[in-house]
Figure 1 (cartoon, rainbow, N blue to C red):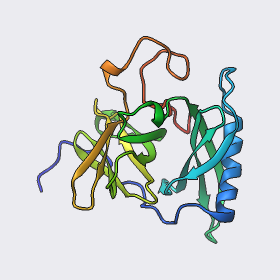
Figure 2: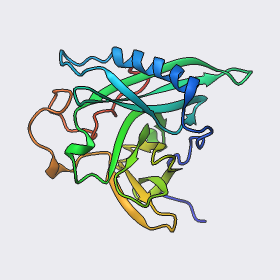
Figure 3: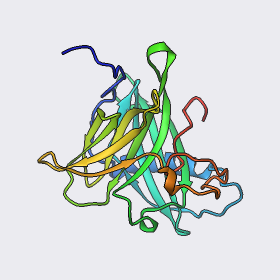
Figure 4: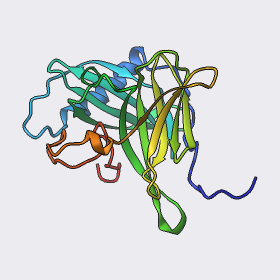
Length: 232
């Protein structure tokens, strides 16, 4: 094949290695996630306590495994984030870390959504001429039926994919690179595209009011991206 003009890291993360978290393992992860939820700075807003935690497929990158999660509160907010860990020589998890945030922008209030997405930036990847991509953890569920696989595309170039597990998926992919932004697509088993969502709101969907964090700045749909582990 000839050289490509889209020289960007692709399929960097390991595919899921475990079943969706359950039992004692889910309880251990829940403890970490709820601790991160308790540390959320809601700027004085009452968001409520987490209900059932839904876990998403694990993905591993740079020696750490990330297990995303979402939970609703009794006040109608959605808590989202992840628990990450490394593995010791005996294969046991250690060095747990967790991040969490919240949003009031939920799927029920957005009937036009085809995919319900959450995202958080994990760090940077440095490309040509010092250009940087944001390595982004993306997880969610399809809101249309018939899907089997979800891909992440950057300028129509597939950079990650994940099969659905109980209608849930997790991706780790480069975003915001050379003016290109991720688009997440849902595919059937026969390779038919069923849905597509950008991580970013279209310009005509944005208004002049404040977003969830009260800044009024344009940004990713769920407000989760834009912060790396180095900034957390």
